[in-house]
Length: 320
Image (cartoon, rainbow, N blue to C red; front, side):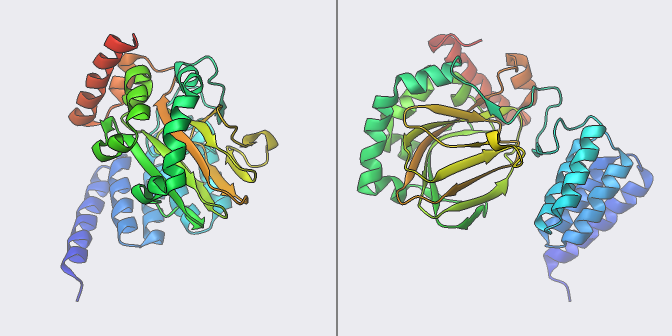
């Protein structure tokens, strides 16, 4: 006998499939069917549903991205890449290496960005000593790691990766703000592009020696991920974008920012002997206007959080 939740899911799937038979061009029905199968560990059935969604409407990106994710989890990497290439040909994705679950078509797409002229780059690098002087004692005492959360997305193949969220989806994290008041205040007062990023975070990230983080994609192409190197030993690397291109593999530098679009596939590995510490600051894609940012928010809560931070940014840093 099936458990009650599986009976409920089976009924949902049957209902959705009946709807799909009536609404043959509705890709969202098949997306829902696939998601239910995925939640219950039925990956092959999920993949079939996502492919049906692509057939129903090849101009909807979500089924392509979900099919790629499912194929990747099944170890069928070449097929995943072929599906992504199909999406690029249909002009619903920009690049087969860029596969975020939330996607705005038309935004400039490249894995690596130069932020030397951006406010986030100027503020972080210009205040590096203040940031370092607050973060390093926490690292040395062990308080940073003990107060942080480990990987919550099963991304770590080996080793240990922890993060201390200071601002998460626009919301300042109270207990962590107490630990890092100066860094939190700096971001809130001077980098509204980060404090208002509803699909991002600002956090201190510690990577232990020997850690490998598997290739993965961030949730949206509306954000850029900036890393400020704080403690950078030898042997720590990050790759974003096509792994065949050597320039896509980078290393951090103390006091300097690197920036990548984490909707591109990326991975991290650390073959050194000391902890690597960076400050991660997510900011809005630079091409997005206020109206673009507002339109990309999902629901009233995200819009309210963004607008509150936007108003504060206008008053403090002069954001527009």
